[in-house]
Image (cartoon, rainbow, N blue to C red; front, side, top):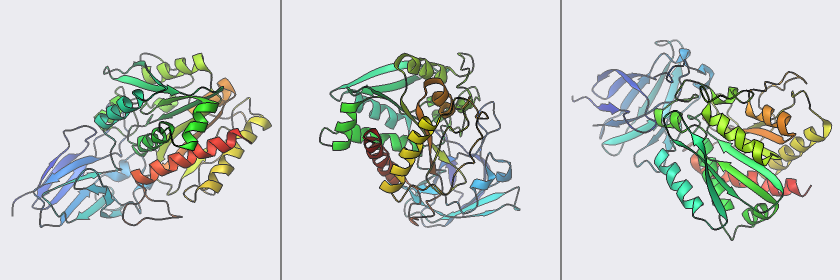
Length: 376
């Protein structure tokens, strides 16, 4: 029996081949460069037509978030457009923790990923299309270590300063799918949500804060192995030029409302994390955040408030994280939006789990909630 071939030498690719035997393979995830983080995988398999693939990714108890593997189903696509889920099971006791993926492709080639990838080519297409839209201005806030631009799109004529930014953690690709959905709403002249926000707000949108990590197939860090969401209290050109450029731009505009878009490996739900622990926390600022969260919960069954992160006591917030830093620095109503890598257990989809399509739909509900929040 001929062996399948496995390759990850492309944008956001990540896998190492340990062994291949026919249609079975043992694989390992590469660590982020100069870092111990590893969880993101993205690779293609060829020579698979007519056979069931059995792909074993090992040593996952040493991954960044081993609690993310139980009940997780790997993403798979044969056309790189529609991403479904392949039957997957996790055994923490097999070869240091093994995810076994079983899939029988209809064609000779299939792609597998931790979540549906959002390529840098698609990113550039998105930026080009939006930048050409009437009323939108483009700015390059800076460049990364590897010379990639940090793109920002600005629109709107209102007084409320809104910042939306995503993919500080590059492996959380659902965040840029969310951005695509948000920009479609904001740039559609017939969409009442987009029209209202552009009338009432000045919106600054950074679809991808970490293009180097995205290209490299990193889970969580930039090209220097730095977690950008631990740099907001003291960003430097030597470690985190991405954060330095974005925060400098925010200092020029001010920030009233901010959403940092992410994905969570373990919690099978959509939720928000706030800034309760900042030193300057006030009832008024806290009420503004609670109001937005309540509106979003009412608007979409994909969002809930029962599951999420623990709340920090006042004065104990980590100000190196963007949500806390922006709330403290500007008095902003800032928040972190988390989407699942798995599925939304409260509203499951067995075919796709959480998906690009649902990420984009959630973006519209988030923006519609912002319209209502502005009118409170």
